[in-house]
Image (cartoon, rainbow, N blue to C red; front, side, top):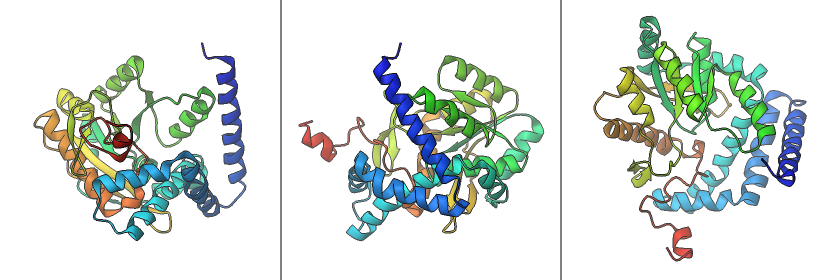
Length: 301
């Protein structure tokens, strides 16, 4: 059982989060996005150490950047994260905009064909732009995407977090035995499944991402191979006016899980290099995969 003091801390944190998110809804849509982006970039990122993490990751994988370019990304990445969170909690205003987002690339035809044939498909994206824009745009075309998520440690926050995700398409599945079982049933029944693949998973195989070793789960490719369904990379790319363009790519050819997952990493890398301020650089993406970071050196590793 959760210790009472920790439970109270979770409750207090959630109370603050609900209060802030509720207060933001009093503002017009674009104003609330601007405010939450600014707070995330200029208040939360320095307080949480995320600016230092972003700089460290950029120095590791994009050392060619000038100081000005690096510092622009240090500001842009948390700003995008703040905007994405506010969009999640603004479904009434965001969904109609996402419905109208143009969808580009050959992946859309593959998904429409999968729906028509009842075969299902796995759609892979990253913490890039806003993946909810991708889900919303597909939902508007009659292609609801089931989502896999990691439950929050804070149970109070998790309850409304899951409800907000469900506004952009159902069903959603919590990581764990039961969630995985229901996810497989959904896919085998012809449903579309969305997976976010860019987090470090302990004990996962080491592949390449942004030119450096990175532990990467093979689960998306494993599912596509096991059930014979398309594996489609897709992204919600933010535009300067906070509209989105949905980029879909041709299905990854079925070879081996390792080769297919490396192609997924390469796909996301291309998006990150094109729009570096839209990726969540706060992840500890390359740790424990043979990379000697400044943090490791400071600890004597």
